[in-house]
Length: 553
Image 1 (cartoon, rainbow, N blue to C red):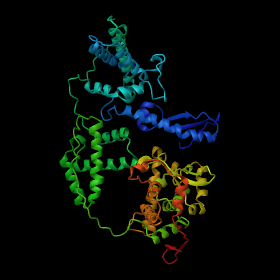
Image 2 (image 1 turned 180 degrees about the horizontal axis):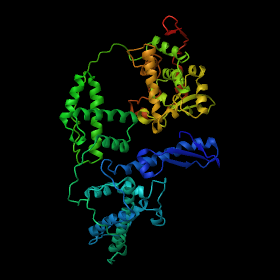
Image 3 (image 1 turned 45 degrees about the vertical axis):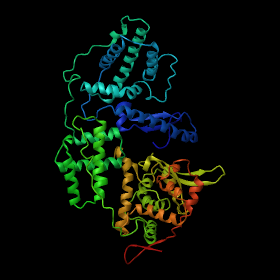
Image 4 (image 1 turned 90 degrees about the vertical axis):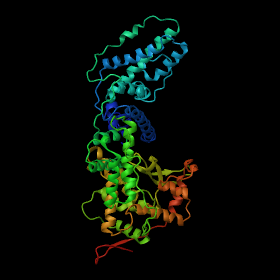
């Protein structure tokens, strides 16, 4: 949820977040609730963002655990006894490596101290000073993050793979085994070489017939394209649009090569696919920066992060496509003045058809918001109604603003920014529309209940598609990107109004080329002054009886 939730019984406010699909096997919950410890709605809003950030940080830490679980190899569950039985091997190997010459006792004291954060609270030394940041940031999960590479190497040598909960369980058991091994070596360093009674606590496990010994190489298993893509989506967490695009490229290549095993792809397959795409009239730039780049990046991840026996190289790494330096340009990338007026005039007309409130609102307001902010249409389309808010400055001045934030969906560079609304948009009644959407707690321009389960947020992507189709087919404006043309026009006008380039970069969400641009921030008042320099689009609309189209007045 993008807003605090009030408990219906006792009135305390909570942060409620759906657990990401890739973390559900570890968290073992569909939803996380964290109390904000207040009944005051204003205070709850203030605390809410901080708590959400803390939870997302904890989830990112958990993803570091997940990267040690092989997504494309059969994974098994591990019982508690098996976990401690396997951990016993770490105990015995650690003691055997140092028992003859244990060295200085302080070394083992330091090793035991370093393990404290990885141990369950009941097993830590009193006064160890371990700081707890969250429910998943210490104990077994902390052990998995810190001991994960070592345990993963151990499992690979045994040709073994565990599911995420079992991997975490084993890492916790290994942390306890190391603690006991260090304690025994500490006694040895003090001159006490008596047998350790705790060594007998590790159960002896029967050999699994399917587990190979350390000298047996890992088996070569076929790597299905869907298995690989699911592993990439789960562990690398690419943005939705990136996954949709790049996964499509790899599937296309596999169909062309007529292969089902990704590990059987060759460099020749990629080169032949590239050449076929060019012969079919695909733009060389699309082939280079779309097709080849997508396949190259997915295979690079497969080679680097999954350690699949079959994928020993990135066969697309050296396959390139030259892009002609000269490109024919028939017109400007921005809307002309008359095209802009035609679109904005059309937004004033009543919509035809049975549109939802959100869809009608999108056609009415999205072009105006793009025209006066230069924001990307996707950033506007996914915005929740709560992002329209009034900001009051210390001097008492107030500004209505919209907040573009990754909390609503994909944002370039994943950086939120606040943009003041142009006075012309406010005067037309946009705030009344935003308040109606806030009253029902919905996004501005799409209806979540019309989505399909977890795919609800992807409805926002359709908003821009519909608007583009409307501009091209109904308004007959072609030769320019039907939504991105606003972004180019905003930049064009801003240059002619002598607005500072760094201010415009911030408003439009461009990353400044100068390192100094990364320091500091921009005051709302300064941003508002820049936006108000944009000339008003004073338009009205009427329907032409002769052509059925929109006439500009």
